[in-house]
Image (cartoon, rainbow, N blue to C red; front, side):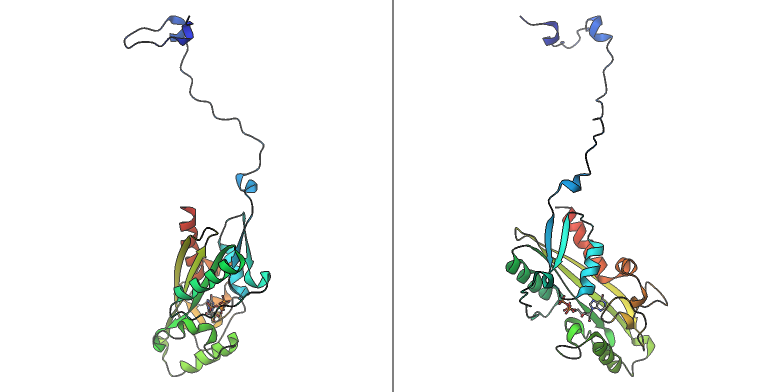
Length: 240
Ligand code: ITT
Protein backbone atom coordinates (compact mmCIF):
# COMPACT_ATOMS: atom_id res chain seq x y z
CA UNK A 1 0.00 0.00 0.00
CA UNK A 2 1.37 3.36 -0.91
CA UNK A 3 1.29 6.28 1.49
CA UNK A 4 0.37 9.83 0.36
CA UNK A 5 4.04 10.83 0.45
CA UNK A 6 4.83 8.21 -2.19
CA UNK A 7 2.30 9.66 -4.54
CA UNK A 8 3.50 11.68 -7.53
CA UNK A 9 1.27 14.47 -8.85
CA UNK A 10 0.16 14.31 -12.47
CA UNK A 11 0.25 17.22 -14.96
CA UNK A 12 -2.69 19.57 -14.41
CA UNK A 13 -3.57 17.99 -11.06
CA UNK A 14 -3.98 20.31 -8.07
CA UNK A 15 -1.96 19.31 -5.02
CA UNK A 16 -3.85 18.69 -1.76
CA UNK A 17 -3.82 21.78 0.53
CA UNK A 18 -1.37 20.28 3.04
CA UNK A 19 1.25 20.12 0.24
CA UNK A 20 0.27 23.31 -1.59
CA UNK A 21 0.55 25.37 1.58
CA UNK A 22 4.17 24.36 2.11
CA UNK A 23 6.41 26.84 0.27
CA UNK A 24 9.23 25.20 -1.63
CA UNK A 25 12.41 25.49 0.41
CA UNK A 26 15.61 26.66 -1.19
CA UNK A 27 18.54 24.30 -0.55
CA UNK A 28 20.23 25.33 2.69
CA UNK A 29 23.99 25.95 2.70
CA UNK A 30 26.11 23.47 4.62
CA UNK A 31 26.82 24.74 8.13
CA UNK A 32 30.38 26.03 8.41
CA UNK A 33 32.78 23.41 9.71
CA UNK A 34 35.65 24.00 12.06
CA UNK A 35 38.08 22.07 9.87
CA UNK A 36 41.34 23.59 8.59
CA UNK A 37 41.76 24.79 4.96
CA UNK A 38 41.95 21.99 2.41
CA UNK A 39 45.60 22.64 1.55
CA UNK A 40 46.67 21.60 5.04
CA UNK A 41 45.22 18.14 4.43
CA UNK A 42 47.14 17.61 1.23
CA UNK A 43 50.28 15.50 1.49
CA UNK A 44 53.48 17.43 1.00
CA UNK A 45 54.87 17.12 -2.51
CA UNK A 46 58.63 17.31 -2.81
CA UNK A 47 59.89 18.93 -5.99
CA UNK A 48 63.61 18.80 -6.71
CA UNK A 49 64.90 21.99 -8.30
CA UNK A 50 67.80 21.05 -10.56
CA UNK A 51 70.14 23.93 -9.82
CA UNK A 52 73.24 24.83 -7.91
CA UNK A 53 72.38 28.52 -8.17
CA UNK A 54 70.92 29.66 -4.82
CA UNK A 55 69.63 32.90 -6.40
CA UNK A 56 67.38 30.96 -8.74
CA UNK A 57 66.15 28.71 -5.94
CA UNK A 58 65.12 31.70 -3.80
CA UNK A 59 63.20 33.25 -6.70
CA UNK A 60 61.44 29.98 -7.51
CA UNK A 61 60.42 29.44 -3.87
CA UNK A 62 59.03 32.97 -3.73
CA UNK A 63 56.98 32.66 -6.90
CA UNK A 64 55.32 29.23 -7.11
CA UNK A 65 52.53 29.57 -4.54
CA UNK A 66 51.64 25.94 -3.94
CA UNK A 67 51.65 25.67 -0.13
CA UNK A 68 51.91 21.87 -0.09
CA UNK A 69 54.93 21.79 -2.45
CA UNK A 70 58.38 21.76 -0.91
CA UNK A 71 61.21 22.85 -3.21
CA UNK A 72 64.49 21.13 -2.44
CA UNK A 73 67.56 21.84 -4.52
CA UNK A 74 69.48 19.02 -6.16
CA UNK A 75 72.51 20.19 -4.17
CA UNK A 76 70.64 19.75 -0.87
CA UNK A 77 69.78 16.18 -1.88
CA UNK A 78 73.46 15.49 -2.57
CA UNK A 79 75.10 13.26 -5.15
CA UNK A 80 73.91 15.52 -7.98
CA UNK A 81 75.47 14.31 -11.26
CA UNK A 82 75.59 17.88 -12.70
CA UNK A 83 74.51 17.21 -16.29
CA UNK A 84 76.42 18.71 -19.17
CA UNK A 85 74.40 21.60 -20.62
CA UNK A 86 75.01 20.51 -24.19
CA UNK A 87 71.83 21.98 -25.69
CA UNK A 88 71.84 24.87 -28.13
CA UNK A 89 68.70 26.47 -26.70
CA UNK A 90 67.50 27.40 -23.23
CA UNK A 91 64.66 24.88 -23.57
CA UNK A 92 66.99 22.01 -24.47
CA UNK A 93 69.23 22.73 -21.48
CA UNK A 94 66.33 23.15 -19.05
CA UNK A 95 64.96 19.84 -20.27
CA UNK A 96 68.33 18.10 -19.81
CA UNK A 97 68.58 19.37 -16.22
CA UNK A 98 64.96 18.52 -15.27
CA UNK A 99 65.14 15.05 -16.79
CA UNK A 100 68.45 14.25 -15.10
CA UNK A 101 67.04 15.24 -11.70
CA UNK A 102 63.76 13.39 -12.30
CA UNK A 103 65.68 10.19 -13.15
CA UNK A 104 68.34 10.58 -10.44
CA UNK A 105 65.98 11.27 -7.53
CA UNK A 106 62.67 9.75 -8.72
CA UNK A 107 60.85 12.94 -7.72
CA UNK A 108 58.99 15.63 -9.62
CA UNK A 109 61.66 17.96 -10.97
CA UNK A 110 61.89 21.60 -11.99
CA UNK A 111 64.75 23.21 -13.91
CA UNK A 112 65.43 26.64 -15.30
CA UNK A 113 67.83 27.55 -18.05
CA UNK A 114 68.26 31.24 -18.52
CA UNK A 115 70.66 33.85 -19.78
CA UNK A 116 71.31 37.23 -21.24
CA UNK A 117 70.99 38.12 -24.94
CA UNK A 118 72.79 41.31 -26.00
CA UNK A 119 71.75 42.66 -29.41
CA UNK A 120 75.12 44.31 -30.17
CA UNK A 121 76.77 40.90 -29.58
CA UNK A 122 74.36 39.02 -31.87
CA UNK A 123 72.58 37.45 -28.90
CA UNK A 124 75.67 36.50 -26.90
CA UNK A 125 76.30 35.31 -24.24
CA UNK A 126 72.92 33.47 -24.50
CA UNK A 127 73.09 29.83 -23.37
CA UNK A 128 76.73 30.43 -22.40
CA UNK A 129 75.87 33.21 -19.91
CA UNK A 130 77.13 31.38 -16.80
CA UNK A 131 80.43 30.42 -18.53
CA UNK A 132 80.97 33.57 -20.62
CA UNK A 133 84.39 34.26 -19.08
CA UNK A 134 85.33 30.57 -18.79
CA UNK A 135 84.01 27.24 -17.48
CA UNK A 136 84.22 28.19 -13.78
CA UNK A 137 83.80 31.95 -14.14
CA UNK A 138 82.41 34.00 -11.27
CA UNK A 139 79.59 36.52 -11.75
CA UNK A 140 82.16 39.35 -11.42
CA UNK A 141 84.35 37.81 -14.15
CA UNK A 142 81.38 37.40 -16.49
CA UNK A 143 80.34 41.01 -15.88
CA UNK A 144 83.86 42.26 -16.61
CA UNK A 145 84.01 40.34 -19.85
CA UNK A 146 80.63 41.75 -20.89
CA UNK A 147 81.76 45.33 -20.18
CA UNK A 148 84.89 44.73 -22.23
CA UNK A 149 82.92 43.29 -25.15
CA UNK A 150 80.63 46.36 -25.12
CA UNK A 151 83.37 48.95 -24.52
CA UNK A 152 82.96 50.77 -27.84
CA UNK A 153 79.19 50.36 -28.11
CA UNK A 154 77.12 53.58 -27.74
CA UNK A 155 74.28 53.83 -25.20
CA UNK A 156 71.56 53.59 -27.84
CA UNK A 157 72.87 50.19 -29.02
CA UNK A 158 73.19 48.42 -25.68
CA UNK A 159 69.74 46.79 -25.70
CA UNK A 160 69.49 43.31 -24.17
CA UNK A 161 67.08 40.91 -22.55
CA UNK A 162 67.08 38.12 -20.05
CA UNK A 163 65.36 34.95 -21.14
CA UNK A 164 64.19 32.01 -19.06
CA UNK A 165 62.69 28.63 -19.84
CA UNK A 166 61.29 26.58 -16.95
CA UNK A 167 60.68 22.87 -17.42
CA UNK A 168 58.67 20.88 -14.88
CA UNK A 169 58.52 17.08 -15.11
CA UNK A 170 56.00 15.53 -12.75
CA UNK A 171 56.39 12.15 -11.00
CA UNK A 172 54.29 10.49 -13.72
CA UNK A 173 56.55 11.91 -16.48
CA UNK A 174 54.18 14.61 -17.73
CA UNK A 175 56.02 17.75 -18.81
CA UNK A 176 55.16 21.44 -18.61
CA UNK A 177 57.13 24.38 -20.04
CA UNK A 178 56.93 28.08 -19.11
CA UNK A 179 58.92 30.85 -20.82
CA UNK A 180 59.61 34.49 -20.01
CA UNK A 181 61.71 37.48 -21.11
CA UNK A 182 62.69 40.81 -19.58
CA UNK A 183 63.77 43.72 -21.82
CA UNK A 184 66.38 46.30 -20.86
CA UNK A 185 69.91 47.45 -21.62
CA UNK A 186 73.46 47.06 -20.34
CA UNK A 187 74.93 49.91 -18.29
CA UNK A 188 78.64 50.84 -18.11
CA UNK A 189 79.36 50.07 -14.46
CA UNK A 190 77.80 47.66 -11.93
CA UNK A 191 75.37 48.88 -9.24
CA UNK A 192 73.20 47.20 -6.57
CA UNK A 193 73.65 44.33 -4.15
CA UNK A 194 70.63 42.06 -4.75
CA UNK A 195 70.09 39.21 -7.20
CA UNK A 196 72.96 37.48 -8.96
CA UNK A 197 74.71 37.13 -12.31
CA UNK A 198 74.39 40.17 -14.60
CA UNK A 199 71.81 41.93 -12.39
CA UNK A 200 74.18 44.81 -11.40
CA UNK A 201 74.70 45.74 -15.10
CA UNK A 202 71.14 45.19 -16.31
CA UNK A 203 68.79 48.16 -16.47
CA UNK A 204 65.25 46.84 -16.98
CA UNK A 205 62.91 48.98 -19.12
CA UNK A 206 60.24 48.40 -16.46
CA UNK A 207 62.14 50.10 -13.60
CA UNK A 208 63.76 53.30 -14.95
CA UNK A 209 66.77 54.34 -12.84
CA UNK A 210 66.81 51.09 -10.84
CA UNK A 211 69.03 48.22 -11.87
CA UNK A 212 67.88 44.63 -11.53
CA UNK A 213 70.32 44.29 -8.60
CA UNK A 214 68.57 47.17 -6.81
CA UNK A 215 65.23 45.33 -6.64
CA UNK A 216 64.11 43.06 -3.81
CA UNK A 217 63.13 39.47 -4.65
CA UNK A 218 59.40 40.23 -4.93
CA UNK A 219 60.02 43.32 -7.09
CA UNK A 220 62.40 41.41 -9.33
CA UNK A 221 59.99 38.50 -9.72
CA UNK A 222 57.20 40.89 -10.72
CA UNK A 223 59.12 42.05 -13.83
CA UNK A 224 61.73 39.36 -14.47
CA UNK A 225 62.09 36.65 -17.11
CA UNK A 226 62.07 34.00 -14.33
CA UNK A 227 58.95 35.48 -12.70
CA UNK A 228 57.17 35.45 -16.09
CA UNK A 229 58.25 31.86 -16.83
CA UNK A 230 57.13 30.72 -13.38
CA UNK A 231 53.75 32.40 -13.72
CA UNK A 232 53.24 30.79 -17.15
CA UNK A 233 54.14 27.42 -15.61
CA UNK A 234 51.87 28.00 -12.64
CA UNK A 235 48.94 28.79 -14.98
CA UNK A 236 49.56 25.53 -16.87
CA UNK A 237 49.80 23.49 -13.65
CA UNK A 238 46.66 25.06 -12.18
CA UNK A 239 44.72 24.00 -15.29
CA UNK A 240 45.62 20.32 -14.88
P1 ITT B 1 72.21 26.02 -12.82
O1 ITT B 1 72.52 25.58 -14.23
O2 ITT B 1 72.81 25.16 -11.79
O3 ITT B 1 70.73 26.25 -12.62
P2 ITT B 1 73.52 28.47 -13.61
O4 ITT B 1 73.74 29.78 -12.92
O5 ITT B 1 74.71 27.80 -14.27
O6 ITT B 1 72.86 27.46 -12.55
P3 ITT B 1 72.29 28.68 -16.21
O7 ITT B 1 73.10 27.61 -16.82
O8 ITT B 1 70.83 28.75 -16.54
O9 ITT B 1 72.36 28.64 -14.62
O10 ITT B 1 72.96 30.08 -16.54
C1 ITT B 1 72.27 31.20 -16.23
C2 ITT B 1 73.23 32.37 -16.21
O11 ITT B 1 72.59 33.47 -16.84
C3 ITT B 1 73.48 32.79 -14.77
O12 ITT B 1 74.61 32.17 -14.22
C4 ITT B 1 73.65 34.28 -14.92
O13 ITT B 1 74.95 34.58 -15.34
C5 ITT B 1 72.67 34.60 -16.05
N1 ITT B 1 71.34 34.87 -15.50
C6 ITT B 1 70.23 34.10 -15.61
N2 ITT B 1 69.21 34.63 -14.93
C7 ITT B 1 69.69 35.77 -14.38
C8 ITT B 1 69.14 36.73 -13.54
O14 ITT B 1 67.89 36.64 -13.10
N3 ITT B 1 69.90 37.72 -13.14
C9 ITT B 1 71.17 37.83 -13.55
N4 ITT B 1 71.80 36.95 -14.33
C10 ITT B 1 71.05 35.90 -14.75
